[in-house]
Length: 282
Image 1 (cartoon, rainbow, N blue to C red):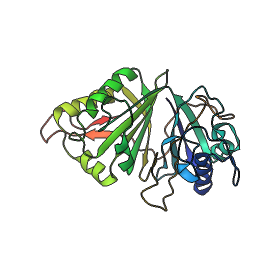
Image 2: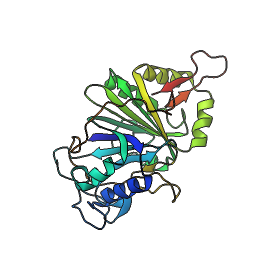
Image 3: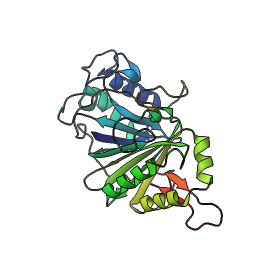
Image 4: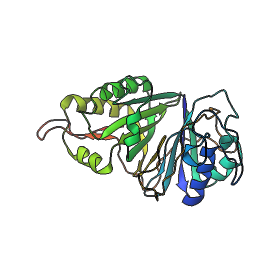
């Protein structure tokens, strides 16, 4: 698996949503058709056979984030979305746009503590925090994430899972999936067991954060948004080709955008009076 991360400011949310829905259905243009890129549900909209999206959505300040599964890197033309007119129209709606492919990917959660297989609990997420940055030791970070997952759900009842992906040069994106915004903020303000706080602090020390995006109503693979009128957009399961950048879009290192929150992840606090409070998982 290769994770493709896309980030950019949205110029036209409705047009962006339409373009992504065409990609999800395997269509190259309005009213047209495109060859499916792999397995997946047939039909239009997010349940189509084109894009395989882990998460897509927009932040409250208008930043789009899309995390896509390129599950067949050898199939360079597997999905019309990435190489055809649909991508040209989609990518043109984001200014500026960054596209980065991450070959090192880990998913941990209540149902997959070893980082293997699926994590159906993510389908319950209604609040996702995305961290962009760099790490000098992704293997050590992955191990800390696995150790944290073994403590779920007791350590953080609101946290359903963590998706982490890294490039060979250390550029990192992490998505923390939470059950709801209210539960997340309550847990952020609460205390944490010392062992878990130490895990989070150690993980935080391995990451230099560049930017943070919060998706308050994300679209996740396999389900529609919680509210039908949401401005957030997304796709569903299916094959995606080419672990490379779409034509005409250069990969750029991600930098902070105006309005990005200064911190993210799973904030951990010990009981009042304990040392080392406020560690963040990033």
